[in-house]
Amino acid sequence: MKLGIVGTGLIVRMALPVLKDSCWTPSAICCTERSKEKANALAADYYIPAVYTDFDQMLSEADMDAVYIGI
Image 1 (cartoon, helix red, strand yellow):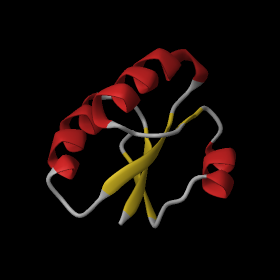
Image 2 (spheres, rainbow, N blue to C red):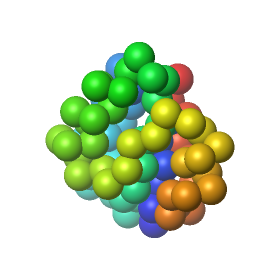
Image 3 (cartoon, rainbow, N blue to C red):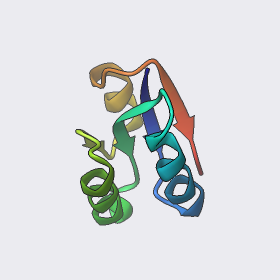
């Protein structure tokens, strides 16, 4: 199942390793403009194909079954 992630904070950084071993595959991550560098690093580390700074855009474009809001 495909999951969209919102946030780049501690909770998201703790959840991503756990998600790696589950049926959920992160397909997008959304953050604020000021956290884009962190989101890009997380995307690279966890093979997340898309980074967004606009939540509505992520909802309309990303292929996901659910959204995890970790903020």
